[in-house]
Length: 133
Length: 285
Image (tube, rainbow over the protein chains, first blue to last red):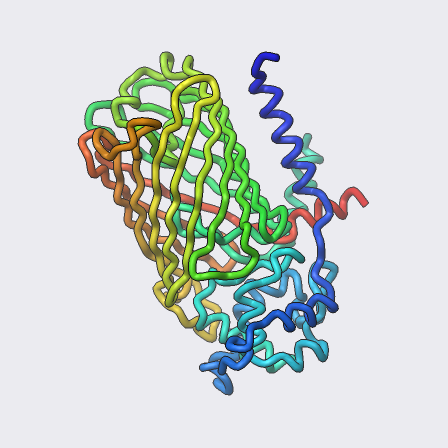
């Protein structure tokens, strides 16, 4: 059969569009506990260098609005796309747990990795989240 | 048609910003598009070769996060050469996959792209083989007759360390019709100007700017793996993330060898539309 680049190109585009619009897995509350269980012991014990600093909480609030509110809701109470963060599973998480979970995400379940943010900004986010939980 | 355009705009308007475009033009990192987010970018390059006519080439890029570990991107390319003509040069469809789902010291990404371009494409998104500025000296009318059906693969390694991102890409490209495999590389390093976010909303805070550089070029081809006779570029870069989700980027690139274009100026504007896929799916429920 002769090589048909036009057909291949169209097929590729259709496949792309179909898969792109296919249903995505949404991270659920149960996944939060599972994600917390995966946090390594060393990360679990990490201390937040910004803990208790009001400036960091304000910066974290700004970062949450910019990067997280679209999925988790402006008040972190969740949406169709991502779970409520004001739940016991999150309340019991250490600041190190939250740092690790934000930095690594849960790629399989649709939570992106936020390692593109500097560690300092992730800690600022954690400082803000802890005021909500 | 107007109704379709208005519906599309309606989808876009209520959206807010999320993560934004990386600072590089040629180098890929392990940072994927957020699932369901669509990023629209325009990235023109202005070329000043030594021996050929100046040109402007550009890509319209649509990048979509299919899964947390899978990003797909579609490009539509075109170019205009001074004193010659303006034309569309083809399209590309790329997919990037993250095989390791956690952050590591070095994070690998597998990249596969199908390209259907003609020989007049001058976007220079990657430099491979013995690509040189002499390629740009041929008139567009002749260049467009050459059809390129290519598969391009990249092995991407990317690390985040103390605020720095350091990325290395190894490129292998094959014209499906003929020609041997051609090889190239792209290296990038960048860092935000401020690692700590300020407490107030701001547009000009150091945390919104990222600076760095890229180094990219060709590595010859199958059985002629070499630096000799290949083109290489060094390009400092600056990216500015605006709070509304727009990223502006600029990168002057300098040719390092006699076969390189003397100067390439790249600029980019991109806009992130979080939750795009979710809104589209809701339309069909």
